[in-house]
Length: 190
Length: 190
DNA sequence: AAATATTAATCGATCGATCGGTTATTTCAT
DNA sequence: ATGAAATAACCGATCGATCGATTAATATTT
Image (cartoon, rainbow over all chains, first blue to last red; front, top):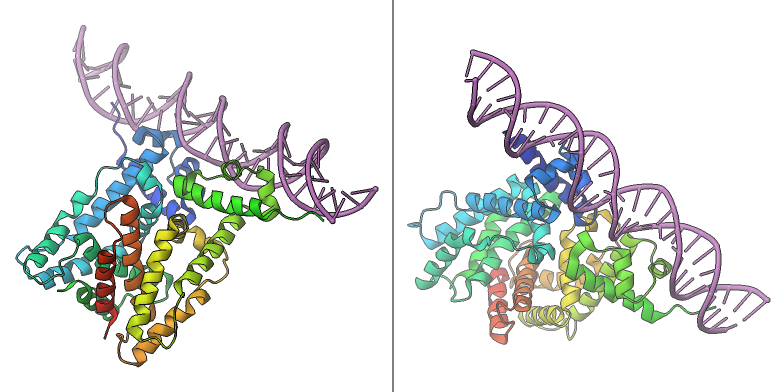
């Protein structure tokens, strides 16, 4: 049998993410995606069951890419504070190096689509993050508060910094990053 | 001449917000909005020029409602820490009392539509918030960091708490709120 | 009666999806 | 070793449904 063309699959993948960032859910369509990917509209249905299936699978794939990068150079013997800083830096690097991926995730997470689709659970991708926080809490270095809330103080400030950076409002400089690392740490430390 | 029916205008307003929260930008349409509002499709065009005009005007109106509630009981003679807590509580109350408004804003802010539309500038609605932070910085009570970044540590944790509350994951209890007020304050205090 | 709000009906365009036909690749009997 | 059969990727064309938008006609008000 004939092989699936990975280039085609990848082209659809990238075209969808690009287009969604440019025109949003309201205006995106299979025909536009096909045209951008230089592929027939019908070919998309070889790889994906439907428009929703396409968007959902891309979401999971992008989130996987993010989690992979998030835990780079992370050693479980690292002191809590050092591990925290490492993850923060990995996170910002992912955002800056993958603007379209990051902005795609942001838009997707805010849409009702994420609840409508029965997505593979992505929380398991971030288990090491939860474990780090639990360890910090056991050692009395982190506030004894729901880990979900603690992580809120780590992720969203970085997301905001990255977005400001893309809009040209503020630079994602080492200075600004260090300020954020300090503020986030002040928020979650015991 | 015949009056415009405020009920109709309000019905369109609410129907759009409800529907957008239920089905998102990808599936919303003028016909669905009209049906939900018990109004003819053409009637919408009496009040709004286009679909984009409709969404944009609703966005500004909702943001205005939010800013009004945000500054309730706010006295500029209040100590920095007390003013901060008042605004945090006002913010969470707005989110909890107006789930559909709040979720609408969240979805809208993440979509490319917000850049595409030439919306009335909404930043002026939140000037008192910026002034409070500037005052705190002058008094040495708040970290000397860009106010935008400081506010990030106040808004997003509350947003996350409200969303968790709506999903039934965590309760937006007084305990959880107090924890957040403490964490946010730890993050921004000098 | 005049003016305006509201409606149902309808426009061409585009939507997501599917179809039959074609091409590329592998399998396998000879 | 070879070529017909089988398989599935791939595409152009097109489906019925719905889109945003407009219209002419009707209803309601002053």
